[in-house]
Each structure stands twice: as C-alpha cells, then as structure tokens.
Length: 491
Ligand code: AHR
Image (cartoon, rainbow, N blue to C red; front, side):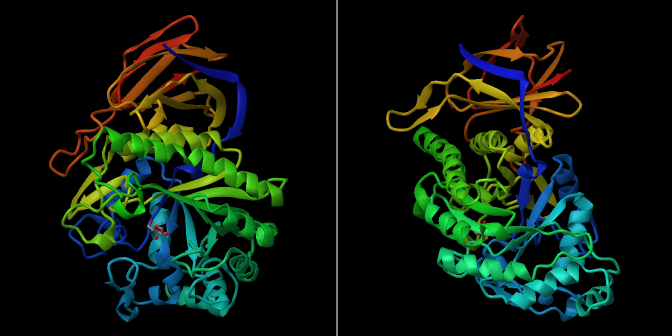
C-alpha cells in the first residue's frame, strides 16, 4: 500500500494558469487546416477559425497561445501577413517541409483566434533574421493607440483600437535555428532588441528571453549573466524522444522498454528545471526572472505516409501519462515556473487535437488537460506519495506520481498517475485538514498504446471513478495500471 499525503493546511504558491498553455507554429497542419480554414471553407468556422477546434480548446480553458514559432518565428516577417490577403507575399517555409506559406494567417487572424479562445496571446518576435526596427514596429502596430505610422497602418487594415499584448518573446532557439548564436552574443542582442519593445499606454510587455535546450546550463548562465535585469522570464525547451533525437521511435508501436524509457526521459524535466533555476539564482537571487517551458512534449517519428516536415504523430495513453507527469511537475515548481506551452496544439507533435478534413478528435493528452484544468490559478498544496521503482532491469521509474491544489472556491484537486503499464497499485491517501464529505473522481485509463482515431474517437476517454473508499483518514483506492485519476473534493 503506497501512502499519499495531502496537507490542506500547507498552502504554497498559486499555480499560474499559463502553465496549461499551448503552442501553435506555422508548421504542417497546425495553423492551416487545423485551426484556420478561411472564411470560405465548408468546414464550420467563424472568421476562418474552425468552430469545433475553438470549442474544444475553450472547454479545456486554454489560457495562453504562443505563435508564430518555433523556428518559423525567426524567419517570419510580420508585415507580409497584414493587409488584403491577395496582396500578401508568399514565402517558403524552409524549416517545415519547404511548402509555400501564403501568409493568409497573420497578426489580425492570430489576435482574432485569441479573442475567440478568450486566451492571452504570446507572440514570438524575430531576432535571427529580423531587425530591431521590425520588432519595434510590430509591437507599435499591435499595442499603440495614438497617432503613429504603425497605428495608422493597423487602422487602415481595419483595427481601430490597439490590442492588449502581454507576452512577447525575443527570439526562439537562438542557439540553433534562430541564428546559431553564442549565449553572450544573444544576451547582448536581447538587451538591444528589448529596448525598443515599448510599453505603450497601459500595455506592459512581459519580456521573454530565449533560454536553453535541455541541459545546456552554459546557455542559461551566459544569457542570465549579460541580460537578466532586462527580462521578465527566460525559457527552457525539453522534448521527450524515447530513442533519442535521431531515431525518436514510433508514436503507437512500442514495447515496455520503450514505454518506460519515454517516462524516464519525461521525468528528467524535474531535475532540468531545478538545475536551470539554480543557475538563474546566481544572477537573480531575488527571483525577478521567471522560468517558462514554452516547448515540451513527446516527439516521435512521423506517422507513416505523412510529410516528414509536418511532424504529425498519433497520441496514445503513453502521451497521457507523459502529460500528467509534466503537469504535476510544473505544478510543484509553480513558485518559479509561470508558463508552459505543450508542442503543439493541433496536428503537430504531442497535440491535444487532431483533424482530418472536417473531422476532429480529442487525444488522450487533451483529456488530461481537461482533467487538470481546475489546477489553473489554484493554490498548490503540500503533497507527497511513497513510491517504489518499477520498469525493466535497466530502466527505472517511480510507480506513482501526484500533485494537489486548492481552488479559490475551496475545491481540492488531487491528480494521481500510475506509471506502470502492467500493475495496479493500492493507495492509502491521508487528507489533512480536508473535509471528506463530497468527493468525486474521474479516471483516464487504457492499454499503454491505446489511441483515438477518426473512426473510433472515444476509445480513450475519461470516465467516472467510483472505486474508492472514504476512510477516517482520507481515501483508499487502487490506481489501475496506466491511469490518470482526478479527485475533486468540495469543501
Ligand atoms: O516544435 C517544433 C520545433 O522544435 C520548433 O519550431 C523549435 O523551436 C523546436 O526545435
């Protein structure tokens, strides 16, 4: 019997809702076809945005959406994506499949999408191949309400009032696709570019610096040393590739070894976050700079027969476990991790939604985001679970994983995951200072490689979980193999 303890008296920081954020790049069928189909499409849409996708994302309370990249961001020239569509320049999307980008989805369309989703926009500017002036004018175009060349241009394009924009990223992966820079060089460029990212009126920009890949602590150190006092946050990118960057591995066909390897790699993000924070602390002991994980998730070999540049992959119960682990870890680091964006929202990498023509399905990862949504803006509660090592003779992971929070209305949210793909585990939960009169629970569980298809969209779907017993101390239950459970306890 594993012991889970949740202490209702020990309240920690607020879990920023932006931890449940998403990422949309001009990549494959994420934007075009997945989100944006154009006003003339036969697929039901509002101003070109698919109604089914918007509705599904609103259901999980999408809090923030990052755009336009990724690697695409450092090749994107925003002025090509405004004005009458027939006049917009076409370009090659060099990173992603060499396809023609017609720029029919640009700033106005992205802001319209965020309006429909009721989420915060997070725009990533171009440092790699852009200029200071171009970035500065973009922010002026979007956020300045007075008289200026850029605000006049915006008005001529049909938007009278400025938009509100908080999150702005200054470059993406500038150690790689964003310019192959050295950290000190990027740090200096960050200082220069951000100077001209102005706060107009009461619009205050939260400046996000490009951070490291995986365990490149040297990058974090170099950028923090040079530029920490000019930024609000620095990023971290970490993808889970079960068989490494070259081989990656299939999204749907994997054995137990590959399953546990995936989870072991995912669990590593806890250590990566702690170590990057340690480096940040050297230059920012007062914790003025937040950490944002603006790209995370599984990255498998593309689905057979699809364009290798489009990064389209299926999503199984294994992805659901990966999502649950990451979100528990982000919750527990909520004092410093203020945003995270799973890559990517529709049809690319670990998506919450897949589309095919007019059809749309919700992936197992979607269901985890839906189950976890009450953690958004709730207060983290102290919790711990006794675990044992499971896996294979060479690959070890913990059997159970959890986090807990209390919402402003007093509801306690406890999320527990069983990582084993074969064994159920009994759990004895002690709930300290928590009223146990009104407990409900939801479970997502299936075989490790189960997934939803356009023909069978509800193979993996959450169900009510009744198999628990309320005791004097708390709750006793058995977590089935390969499961994610949410307990909702009204106070
Ligand atoms: O999400 C796909 C790509 O992964 C992004 O464009 C890039 O930032 C990262 O390498």
